[in-house]
Length: 103
Image (cartoon, rainbow, N blue to C red; front, side, top):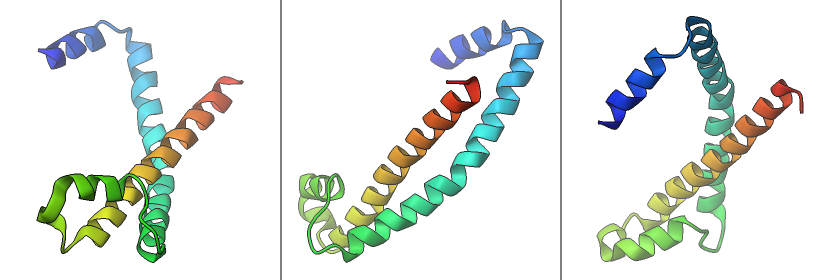
C-alpha cells in the first residue's frame, strides 16, 4: 500500500523535477559508494584487530547468544563495518548535498 502511494505521488511530480531527481539520485549513490566500501573495510579490519569489543557488533552478538558463538568475532567485525561505514557515508552524503546547495 505504501509503495502505491509513493508511486502515485512520484507520478504527480513535474517531468523536469523527475529528471532532476533521477539524475541526482544516481550521482549521489555513485559518489558515496567508494566511501562506503573503503570505510566498511577499514572498520571491519579495525574490529578484527582491536583487542577489545566494539559497539554495536559485540552487543548484537551478545543478544543473539550462543547461536553465533563460533563466528562472533567475524560477525561482530562485519556488523561494525556496516554500521560505521554507513554512518560515515551518511555524513559524507549530507555534507556534499549541503555544499552543493550552497551552504
